Image 1 (cartoon, rainbow, N blue to C red):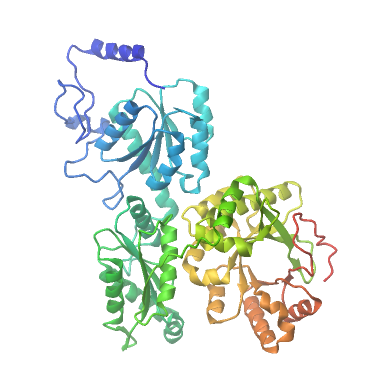
Image 2 (image 1 turned 90 degrees about the vertical axis):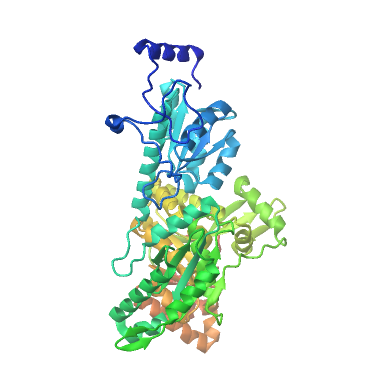
Length: 619
């Protein structure tokens, strides 16, 4: 693991044999904490050898190396139980302007990863209590670090050990002893490549040719970098009100021109704060540390957008806004969670006379403390389970499809449904872990059924708090690819109330999953102006009605509303599901109104097995 005394003596002898004078083939980085030895010359690099050396940072360049001046400093987590070796790596990399954090024990690695958000992990192969293979596998299992480079710095010459770790997700090996210049160059090149690949996945910092605004991925990257640094930054969600009326008045081309003008003004008002257009009438603004406070910037944007008016067809057109804002001090998991929060705040701002609202974190209560602890334990103790209820075509068909329903069984025999579990899990921040568990079970099942030549389609509910996670979509795509399942066999259920509040977040998630063929269903649909607009905003394949429509046979007004909702869905090419059907009268009303699929205890109760006979079912 470390160089032996004999190895060091051989290396020293080889150096002494080459020359009587101790010439240096490299120089320490600027600001390095000490010279190699008292006879070393001042830190400088011959111009002719510039191509063979790594330039030291400028004295004025306390900013870490990056791909452009706006990049956050490079961040490296050093995992090393030997304090001397850890100090060596920290000193060398820190002298090159790289932010370094160390972890001496395996159990400290994952908390450090989540808190520090490193660009690269530099790890010793042999750690007390856990091998490098196990630790690598643990890091790779976390969606946020699936693509973080992991490099081992080790003196172990065993190639089999190295191959084992590489097969489990490590990226490379560096051998001890290593020259400081080599270590710096190796780390910088790998971080630079990793950031370049991330830009390819999420977009670069290109600006819109007409508005000058950045693209959305760039602004989200800036927010993500600010979250890891823990400074006083903030974010704002700017929504132009009455978009539908403006679109009807000016048409598509006129509306786009108006939004371009609004975007250009937002960029001017925001100044050095990067801004991006999110959709037809919404914009995201990042307020970095040192910029005006989010509330102050929100007032500036509101007043500046409203006055002076924009000119359309020779007439003045004033724009009203709803602006939600937040600091980054609420313990957000990632940039997606920040976007989700300010979008919620903007929705609240619609009802405020001043058109502004700050994000208010959800209140946490102790009423469900026992349930929360049971859920935490259940994630690892097998208390969670999935039940399946068939979703049957009213016109008949052989295609097997089920909705997956979450349950948790406690030791005392009590069984909790999703209606009880989800609110408590969202308040406790457990929903992403639970949603990931549900998807893992669903994808494993889809894979098994495909291998058995009995394919099935599963409808799986997911929380918007989970879908807002930066790498959740990438993790799901990797799961679909590694299990070789057909994308259309998975349908993500999105609740209407969630979709209305988190429409930007959900659209971003849908756009990432659509190329894989994953489908989406808007559930608990209740007809209304906002809900109807949402049908055309999201790339949906299905619409599941609210349970109240299953009793429309007793209410003529509700029956008319049901027909209107189904007609609207069919015009958009959506299949309509009638849920929670308990009696023949309700089923008959839904069938005569034109639904495509039916679900409920009248068909079959939820069970742990997929044993419904779709081929011979008669409704």
